[in-house]
Image (cartoon, rainbow, N blue to C red; front, side, top):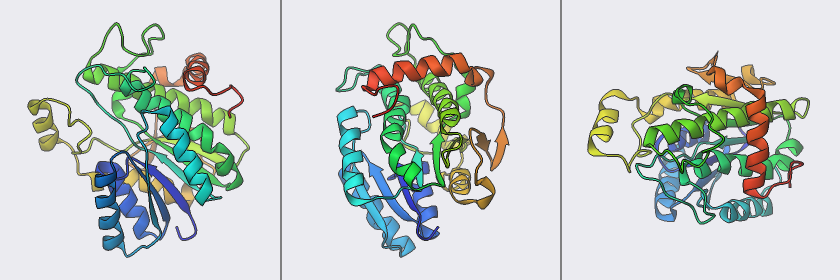
Length: 280
């Protein structure tokens, strides 16, 4: 991975941190994107010390804010002219409905709209760096969701897992639509289910749910194996629009392959993020 520049969102904890650590050990230049400066700096220093890799950078952005995403992209482009791998990992689960500074439901905004906007704003540098890879981190729970275009922001119905699952299905639809649009560009996009990790993703959940995850779920290091593989393996060169789990291609849910839904969601997402359909 020497000479490769990787951006990872949600890089200070859980699967994001474990993925950052693994790719840093392989010699990649890592741009860590974290929401909280203190936690980001702690992880940044820990990873540099553990790996001995000095090529690690830290950028701070709250990805629920579209302005902060735009600021992040501007800062990145002022420092780098290359991006080989973008890993959209940051995600949230909330027990109660909240809205962002943009007035959008927070889970949908963070888990789907943020990757949509960030990826589109970085496509020019990704294409200029081709061959390049985009990796979206999803969950197997997307298979329990259905797209409800009348309630994308969970105003009528909100539930912690219902809303989370729906946001991950949206991310799947985005991935497959983006893959179609990127054909022949030298940039690929795939979606990865890393497994369910013992992380602080659900720190807003109740004590029972948190205890359940500690007993039954995998370590972040184990979950990071597939994202690291998809980011680094020569076997994945040119592979586009696939769903991977346990380092193997899998079938995702029937709903995730609905092209009409994917196109409709793209148009809505572009409108909600202020992007033209031709990208900014």
